[in-house]
Each structure stands twice: as structure tokens, then as C-alpha cells.
Image (cartoon, rainbow over all chains, first blue to last red; front, side, top):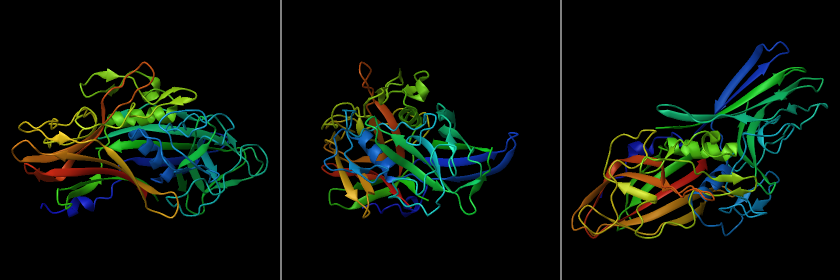
Length: 209
Length: 201
């Protein structure tokens, strides 16, 4: 018997890297704050990936939406089913059901998280933010990395300062069911967006050989 | 912090683990397919045909087709026995992984002739790893050596089958890993290869 390769077992590099970066700009488009972090994919992402790689509908409800309701994963998009696609880069203007979303609660991330703890609603009322339409790029390869970007601009017209302490990516299935693919936290004191300022949020997803 | 990890585990005929290592090497094709999923488009934001199939021919299939219809990366059925064109595959090459890899370096063909191994049907298991929804998702395939001689397996990969209506399916390599510990398989023996994914802290 060839012994298990202990050295390679010790390697902890994830097979998919997800890095985030937030930048706060003032009314004059001047960068006033920037923070970064990486790697907080959640169970919903792994479940959808598994559904992509094996062509059998799940036999039990194995994926949890942002309301903590369980659904089946299916290999195709029959009406009402939860499907394997994960649209998330084109979050429409004002939508907090898909695309990058922000929150105010930086409780530690766990793999079983299914939503942001305290998502910030869209709007111009107190403690609300205006979510612009999300975007994304194609794949850029610069060996040994292939990556693409999912991004969004979020404005503060609430009349006060809002402190961002968590961020994530929501994906909405054709049946209108939203899943949280990843959630990241910004350590205290978080990142402040003053009234009239905006935050540019960027997730970079990459594979590395 | 949580992350997606992949694990490759190989056991021999006696159930002994002969290789276990982290799976690192999604290749460029995977990035294109995932990009299409996220952007609700064909791969690479719908621009060009960057994905290369296992014949190094450009192809356009992805998982998305319209606002309400999606497809997986696996066409119509799990991989049956005897198929070596897609699903989990093994090889004897050990050249370093490159992002642009579209085939294994030296894939072992299905069969019983010299240098060949018999590919069994793929299966799938889900293992519960938390009290919540967290699971380990395992793709499993057995390979039998009836070639008459020993064969040393040095690389493992997965060939997906993206498609959509009227396009594909194409055989597209999405990951390739060179084994840290090559696995010698004697004539008459089998190995079971597991590729598993899970979210972990």
C-alpha cells in the first residue's frame, strides 16, 4: 500500500478563491476608505455546484433559501423548481434579492449561513441604501489565475451615516427563490458610508493552478 | 471564514486509502462556465467561444439559455460504464497543471488491452457534515485493471458535458489534478476514486 500523502493533505488552499473589496467614495468621488477580505462561500454554492456536476434531481430538500425554507435542487429549470443556475452579477436597480447586498451585523460566518444577518433594505429612508444595478466582467486569465468580477455600486441617501459590517452575494432562481452564495464580514468598526457617499463593492472569483 | 474545498480520495481493492489530497485545480474552462452561470449568459459574458472541448475545439455551450430555463453541466444522464469521454477520468501523465489544460496529459482509455482500465458507471453520494444544511457532495467512480499488467495512475480529472438546446453537448475538462502519490494498480485490482466538495471553515 502506498501511504496517504500527508504533505498534500496538509494543504489548505481552497479550490475556488473568492475575494472581496469595498471602497467608500465621498461626494467628490474621493476614496475615503477601503477594506478587503476573502473566502466565505456558503452551503448553497456547494449544493448548486454539485447539482451542476451530476444529472439527477435531489431526492430530498437539500438547499435552503434566504427565508430558511428548504427546496429540491433539479438539473433543469422546470417551473417552480430550484435550478442549478446562479444568476447574481446583474442585480437590478433597487433589488436586494439578487446580486451583491450589504448588512449591518458582523456575527461570525458559518458554513450553514443562509442569508445576511441584517440586510440593509433598498431605499432613501433612514438606514436604507440605494442599490444600483449590478455588473460583472468576463473571464480574465493571467497565468496561473483565471478570474472574473461581480460588482455593484450602492449609494447612501438616507440622511445619516450607515456602518457596513457584512456583505454577500444573493442569487435568485427563475422561480423567484433567493439563495445566499457567500457572506463576508467587515470587522469592527466596519466601514462607514456617510450621507451622500457611495460604496463600490467588488467580488473577484478565481481559479488558480 | 468559510471556503469551498475539494478532496480526491482513492481506495484500493481492499478498501485501503492509497491517496488522499486536496483538489486544487479547476482549470480555465471552469471559470468560463461559472462566469456564465453568474452573469446569466453563455460563458465569458456571452462573448466569444472561449471554452475548449477535449479535442481543443472552441465551443459555446453553457448552462443558461433563457430567463427561465437552465441546464446543468452534465447533459442528460450520469456517466455509464465504459464511457471514458466524460465524467471522472484518470491518466498516467504528470505534467504540471496549466489553466489551459483541456485534456489529461495521458488519459487511460477504457478497455482491457495493455495500458487500459475498465471505467465503471459513476455514482453520487451526499454526506451530512453538519446539523444544518452543510453536506459533502461526492462523485465516485471505480476503475478496474484487467489489462494484464500493472498501471500507475498519476492524474485525475473531470470532464463535464455542458449543453443547451441545439448546442452541444461538448466534452469539457473542468479540473485536472496530478496526484501527489501515484497509485499503482496491479492486474486484477480496482481503485475507487472519489472527488468531493464541501464548505468548511
